[in-house]
Image 1 (cartoon, helix red, strand yellow):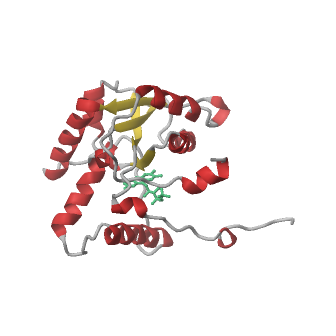
Image 2 (cartoon, protein in one colour):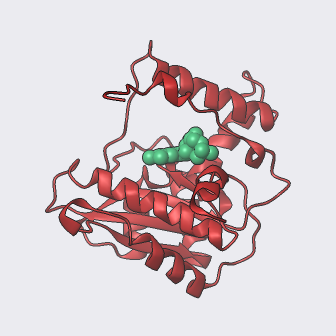
Length: 223
Ligand SMILES: Cc1cc2nc3c(=O)[nH]c(=O)nc-3n(C[C@H](O)[C@H](O)[C@H](O)COP(=O)(O)O)c2cc1C
């Protein structure tokens, strides 16, 4: 797969086979991913890779918090979108596409709650990569670099037949992962990547999200 093929092939995977992922493969993925560019080569990232019983424990505790309405105090900046905006429209369209594939009716509160929970359970992936930054850096400063390395993780994973979903949901209760993985307070929990072998029969994995045509978002100057 060449680079352009990989860029088109990557997509979010939200249903995984239970098969474990060899730690050596994850090491190779992370080694490739840290080739990502960062401002002044500052590399403002660290990783915690969770799997097995401890990941299951994290899922359980996160879902308990979700279901008891515990307040979410994420470490990372959470994006919000103005109600009457194209961004909100795209967000709603994504939800509609996913619910259609998953056969979840708008009024079906139970199934919607089940779907929400899945995100908080890292989509039951066998691996969750948690991306950290350092609190000595500003909250927004390393975001571009974190975004780059996170994308690289997803692209490198493809090479090994692994699917990924970058996700906020898994780190909206950062205290759970912090406690289980022993992450020190100086580290900010930025984002999670659910990772594993894609379940070919999981309907949401069929989703192909649209993109705005480049012509409508690009201004060409001097051509
Ligand atoms: C910063 C970030 C946070 C995300 N958080 C979630 C999430 O919490 N749950 C989820 O299902 N997908 C999440 N996604 C995946 C996006 O929904 C997905 O990338 C987008 O719809 C485009 O689809 P694609 O990845 O299949 O191309 C996140 C992606 C990014 C970049």
